[in-house]
Length: 117
Image (cartoon, rainbow, N blue to C red; front, side, top):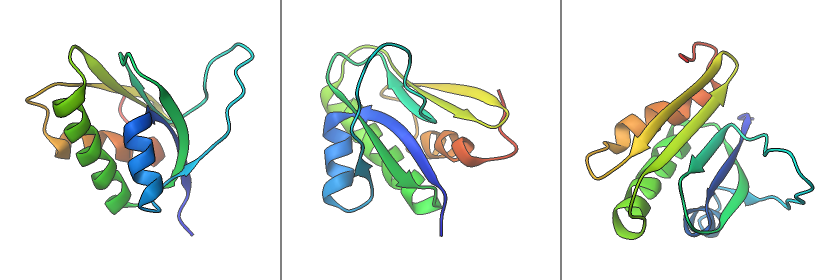
């Protein structure tokens, strides 16, 4: 069984992943403090949703493509994907020239023992 990864994603992306059976929405009760997720999309001015998904190469690639399409179609300004793993944190700014393959590589760091910081 593949390990699970927590991600705080734009609601539109999370809903698409849920409807395709690739992610499960988690209930969130905010009483202060931060969200302890491996993947967080920041800089958005819309609702975000906490989901869990399997750490599989196809899942990382699919999420990367959906984030890229969402960013291109819906979100002006600076959006950043932050990934936290065993060895630290890495960040990547999403803009019109960001390659989805680079986003997928970043997402894979969430479960990697060899993560760069």
